Length: 111
Image 1 (tube, helix red, strand yellow):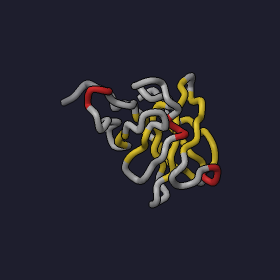
Image 2 (cartoon, one colour; image 1 turned 45 degrees about the vertical axis):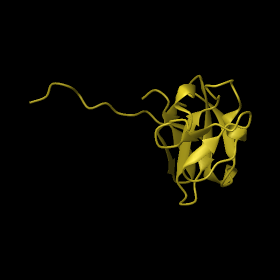
Image 3 (cartoon, rainbow, N blue to C red; image 1 turned 135 degrees about the horizontal axis):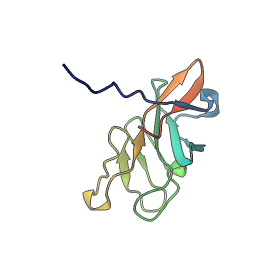
Image 4 (cartoon, rainbow, N blue to C red; image 1 turned 60 degrees about the horizontal axis):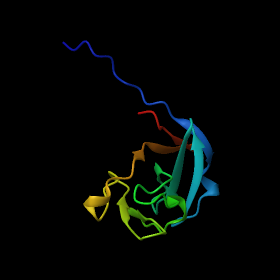
């Protein structure tokens, strides 16, 4: 028997999915954090920290596909799955749970 309570993820609405274009990011403020949100080809969304861990590049301005986003300053690529960089010496980009509910993008930064 476990005594730990299940941890619920608290999602915050940030905008409409119609505000996003596939391949382009958009920055939002979520519960005191800056996040970048991307629309994938299957209609799902991914959220990451808005600032590249390398030199602070604006991640929402980077090119993306359905698996990764590239920082516009030095083209380091970060996986949407786990934030891993194509150059492990750079570190990882924080990724956050994100979803679309009735056309509204929701992101959880505190999980």
